[in-house]
Length: 347
Image (cartoon, rainbow, N blue to C red; front, top):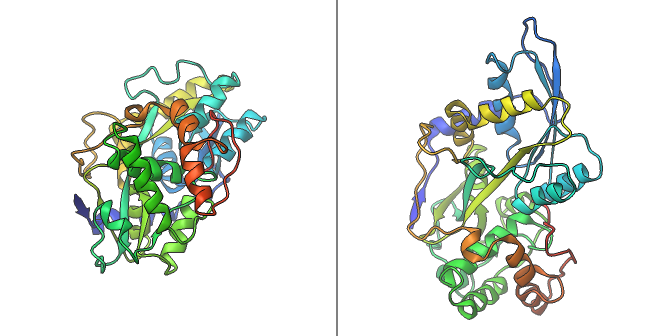
């Protein structure tokens, strides 16, 4: 496994980023002769600071002059459902592919949204094991998390998309990427037995952990970096085997300014854009981008496709009545929330 501590320079960058414009405010563009347009960015909550920095940087380019932004940040599933219900969006940036697929089904995002070189994903991350500073209990592997007396914090996978990534990372690691389902499910059963509380969201679980409860927390790598950047005393380990988290983005089909929206997406995929993402803890999706930040590559990294893809995974594991994870959660007295297999919960 690879254990990382965030660099001081990276922390300083993110702290400066956090001081930028507040969520929901219009962000003004530059001067020039072009007519001003306003783009509506609807995104999941975790990368808010990154997007605020990206907007500022984009507006300093020729393509971004006279472009203003109206931003909305919230739980990924909630944001997806809001757009499907009529919330105006020129650009949607979500946590999970099924949240984007919902908008394709609704006719609001083109079916070929994932046809580009990055397959429609703008950022990546991985599931990590975060601990108290100094890792006093020496928790570095998946096996360490099921030892007697160890408390692990992770959200409820029936309300949190982040929790689904966490569960699938643990399952895939112990099931040999799904080859031994019984071993994977037995491990999840033991793991859930060591989880004292399952919050509704990944960010709420992070607050529970930093508030003093638990010995370890399963987290997105970028969430662990976020905590370190905001002076939370924790360390984190990237396990040898973990899942690649992929975050989708797309231009809405009914955007009134599709050219400007695409220009912003192009900037996000540029080296400058990927560098800002990396400074905020996200792994670049553009091959060869020189971001100045190095992320470890775990030898056993796998993807959702290795487990059968989201449709199959949601049906097999997360169907509220018949899913194998739902049955394990019920055994441990945890409530599940009914949802269609194609739908995603919130980040």
